[in-house]
Length: 465
Picture 1: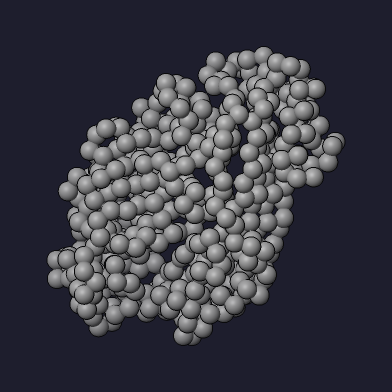
Picture 2: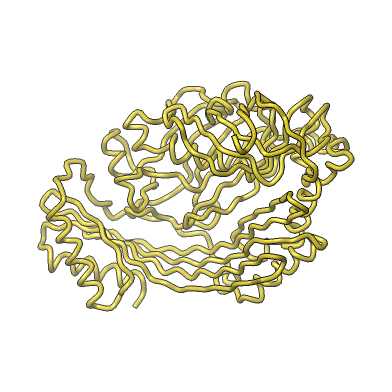
């Protein structure tokens, strides 16, 4: 039975068991996920799973409940409907129920690369082998993964939709002594993952991170590489451009205001790469400009937040959205280019050679009188959602820049910074021309970012502080 047929069967069960007044929407997703992991420069695990999940949301007698299951036989589907109906009758009234998505056209999903969707273990192993070989004897660890998802939507208002997606990603580190270098990349096609290139980048950065010095806390000009910028985008999405947080006045977003530097344009573009053409409520998805040349243009909405705001859903409903709110999970940051690549000749020196592995980052580095090059951010936690003040740590390589030259490695630092302030008017001194897609652990999420040069970033002490 196809995913669309399964979704329709659940809708019919709701009608039969809940009566004509029951409203329901159903998402059925078949996922084929495969992961090849390596550590100590050798593959130690290859896993693959194929699952079918059913998510049901229903509204009856003014109350709303949701349930999910993975048993798609007739008895399993009936049990899912029965327990969700029982839960709805115990829920408090839901006066904000926005109703179901009416039958509407849904765009075609981007084409799926068959070689990626049905990749074999040896194809992932080949890329792992290339990563390890390119690291030149350094200890390596990480993963190569492929994913293929097909999803169908149906509701009791007569709307239905179907789409599929495929993705490949690689995330690995190389270690030299106690220093790590990282390389990450996600793509629609497994053939676009170059394990040798990624391994060479990780190894070069690990070797350049040897013998770090400690710097005092303070504000530094920074050049963030794409892996670090991805953390900025994720937090901006979840906390700032979330329609639920905006309605609750817990977001910094002010549509129509010039809140960011003119160099910044931020677009959520799920159909620009692997992504389903509809959201968890069956609403058609498309590109949504959140920031245009520094001006905030929109926040993401699902049907519930859109109804509260007197507008239309932007196609950003997610499972559990009544709690978490709608989320833009396919962000692409773009803007002015970094400058001429001819400036790259002065980007590294001495032991720090290898810290800069691409021309865009090198071009940004040459303009820095004194600052830091940062590979990655991690363990980031939001201290104040309204102003989006975040604390976290650097990771996988930090280097001191003096007079446009990377001179030496620096020990990891803790930071506390408002992300919107750091990207505010006059604060963005350059963006790379090439956005690099970064993988995410959330199904179907990705962050596409160039390297970015920022005028100021607040480092509050060492990583142990």
